[in-house]
Length: 97
Image (tube, rainbow, N blue to C red; front, side, top):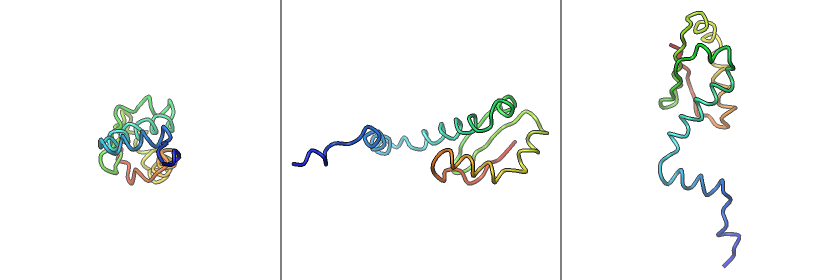
């Protein structure tokens, strides 16, 4: 038996465990929230009250209507930045409320 075939990298083993136990959606939700926090910075995060991924839509609650309007102008750019940061096409839409 070839030992190379039986050896998995830690990343591969974790991915198999995550997929086998249907943990991917929960991890995607956490990663999407972390990506928002990382990419938007302190200025936006100060007014962000919640970030929640449901399906392929990221719902972001903001306490500033002015900021909400300003960010809504660049929603497609925000989606692109988030997906690039996540390394996959996870988010199709951002809803700012």
